[in-house]
Image (tube, rainbow, N blue to C red; front, side, top):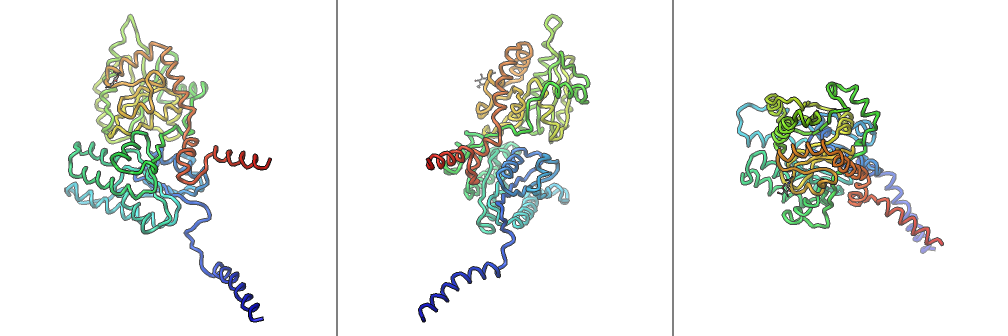
Length: 459
Ligand SMILES: *[C@@H]1O[C@H](CO)[C@@H](O)[C@H](O)[C@H]1NC(C)=O
């Protein structure tokens, strides 16, 4: 009898205590029933297409996403209108009003402290997310804050870096020297703090090799995830194209029957040398003679950025009769349509490190538009000469290639076909297969394998 009472009490306690704990202990409100991911970019969300695609892919696979960054330009509608995505604004340090005449290093330090404080506060309010995906560069102060956050504040959060480039090479270009003390410190900083990440995504295979060789990161933790065109970049139908040419202000002086449309998109940064394009256009212009006239070219330059004034000033010095150039700023919705209307795209992107690839080329391929691209080491992972585009080193090469493309229909057709092949290879599929496993998302093949093997077990 004593034994059965003891057993009864034990059994009662065994079931009752957890049940009471479950009812009485307040639940941690920050743990959500759905998986959460934070996506962080210390840059303008609207001008960070790759981070936007990450966000959409995470949401597509069931995550709630907190998207942290500057909010100068509007991101895609599919992001702003999605109830599963919450945008958290970082206030740019440029808006701080500091007394004039302070030395560069003091201004930089104040800005870093200002950003660190903001990032820390935002991240702390998002504690306990499963993942924190961060764009690099900029690495200062993001890498440090993410390290503190994932190691001390929110230990269940897995911190993942998406490498678009290396912060120190961008800084070296800005300061015009590799040996500058700041560049060395920034390189050390990047080397040191990237080790605390759980995994690394990066944009090219050569970049993955550099991360293993120079940054001593375990290759097992690195996943090359090349940019792929997102769904809004599609070849235009004949009607859409005709409609665009007849209605858009950009094409008021453009005759689609005889003229050719060249497009280039830019953020007017020092890694793009515009003189090359302008010289090539001048060369093209002067190559058109009465006996052998070349088609007229309209060159549309889209984008915004620091060197735009300088570019416009250089353009105003040129006078062409067979070439027209227009600069425009397009919304995220207009951009794919104007790109899609082009006969050919031009990429002037000259990577600061040589290890990243221009997103605009990927976008152009998404629209089935072939690309003439400036040569640099990683480019061959994307553009293959005479298959989906052409590759140039000098402005003379570019001029000659423009002439070739617009006088040899066979060549244009071949590379257009190649661009259409690229076009069928899309971001969300690629993301699911390569990045998915990092976020514990099974890819479709695995799922179908499980299904088919379990059904074969039944037989
Ligand atoms: C550009 O330079 C590379 C190597 O320096 C060379 O292989 C390639 O043929 C050049 N391209 C053109 C169009 O001259």
